[in-house]
Length: 182
Ligand code: AR6
Image (cartoon, rainbow, N blue to C red):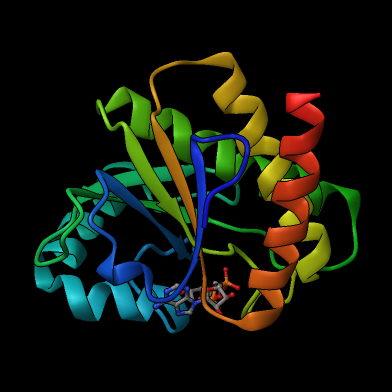
């Protein structure tokens, strides 16, 4: 689906199928895999992703909430996986800031690795229970701001797995992009 901001796209589907320079993983701070989109990425990408994650852990001891780390993408059609750790929702303002950090730091890491296209799942809106409307607002606002400040990223795609997130992103993207165009 296309929006007035032609650098942003939206699809409903499985992020492991996306052939972009980078796909983002909603990981946990151990970086050693889990369920949800994390499990899907490790299953489809194969053992090389976990091996590289283990090396990152050995080097820096995991990944803090809001931070991001990058590996190659194994058998996935993408070139890189950016692993970021979303906040576990507990109703605090700090959670919103950490979620924005996830989007910002993932985009910056993609730029640092010469990626021009990047796909995001709906970070923290599964097991970590971040409210979907607020998470969509933060994701769209943070990505839109980042894109306005750099010409290094050519395309960002939000990959929604469920109808609720897909509907929320459609609304948010239309609103934000209309404001930008006006
Ligand atoms: N493609 C795109 N989106 C997906 C896919 C997929 N294949 N599978 C699930 N989603 P979650 P979190 C959506 O729980 O809330 C893991 O165990 C899903 O519908 O994967 O950040 C990690 O190891 C939801 O909208 O991540 C952590 O321990 C979104 O991805 C913990 O879960 C995020 O849901 C992270 O929790």
